[in-house]
Length: 420
Image (cartoon, rainbow, N blue to C red; front, side):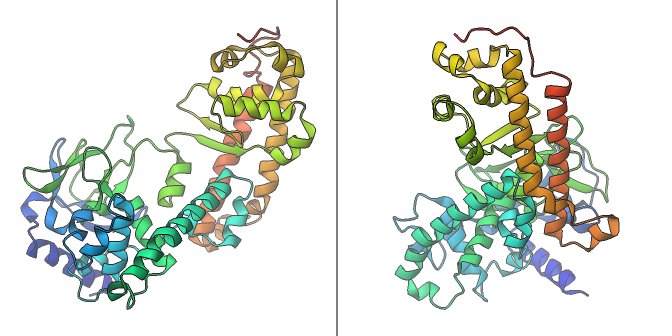
């Protein structure tokens, strides 16, 4: 029996010993070529069937933390209103507690993640032209701030609990992303996250009609967390839930994987603001329009499930002439309806070329990682993800550039209309 098999056997035994009813579950744990570890149907599952029912006693949440050894920490005024930080602290503590009640479950949890926030600087440099580089840096800054402003002072206030454990920044990041990537909401307001044993093994997928594979809820009446299937599964098939209609950008940032094809195409491409600050006329006034309409002035954002006009607005703002800015009282609606002149069309086209050039230059090292499939297989998982993500973004960016200008989708008309 492998170590993995032993851990699964101990986990299953622990579940049953603490109130898990195997007759109320139709899934088990297995490993799949496509996804790694996941949930397998151990019985046929029909639409609306109960897939799994997990008792409150074995759900890791703030409620469990409040009756634990570190209950004093969890109800401390500095963390009593932050369920994420409270749960992170609890996981940090219990993961170092060799006699922890939760040990069989903790052994089943991943020790590493493939989200970009865990990539090395050398891995991240290959996506420097992509907005994922900037957003990852921002996430790291926020996590660092949370750790040093909240976690460290709390740890120092309770040396009786934390002096003997490895309560490092890395441990905090591990606990935080366990919650982000595997947690379920246990309340109707989406404020109380929890880790639900066995249910957390179910991987993400999206059915052909883009519905949700399953629905879930914590039931106060039975004090159990239940998942019901919205689709049938045959015995031996992998069982899925749907994390939501998410783009590959969201899946990579929050979960560390990509889907092919993407359910929703999404693109964030940074504007070359440092260059434009010195070359675009009326730069500061245009920045003022971005701020006024609460549009991100640092990035061009496209989503395939949103109106294309939303994507055009930032380019229109950047391409406006001095006369356009001075003679019109712009509204967001008038910008969307604004039919560009030939002059603005050409300006926008040149600006789009600037955006693409900046992106391709920042990500060009990613293209040198592989020349063939064998090269790709030799890459680390993180570099494989970087390569695939840049390929997908590059393809989408080129497609948008072609449709906007070569096919002239951007040019609604050649006559200059007035802003309202």
